Length: 187
Image 1: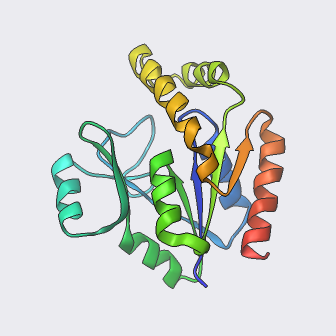
Image 2: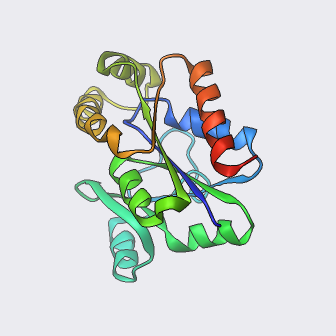
């Protein structure tokens, strides 16, 4: 059976760090590159970190039914998962790993059902999340305020995921993730 692992979390929870750890630890996993209309951050590269599209290009793909799921997270800020990306990974005999926003994670779980393990990465607190976002130094104060407000809402969806991992201690979170993945993919 083709399988997928879905990681979702509020921005700044440590999700991307944990996804990278899982990819390093398990050769069976292959990262699914999402599409987005936001601009690259820091050293992000097109077709490696994301497929960066214009809002017009993204809407064209919606019209073509090219997505497993997509979300307009903010006005003209879309994120989505291409069906072709999932098929490509499955055709290589790999398990797809997703790093997506919370609503995208819920949509993917609904779409893939029992083929999916959905994991919600929760920060220890909203205050810690805000501290992490500030320390990351990639967003201005207004963007951080928006992300923190959104995180409070996103955390209310945690119970719609198969597993919740509270990322208080990164090493503990890594161990928990490793055990969840081993049990799911049977390695």
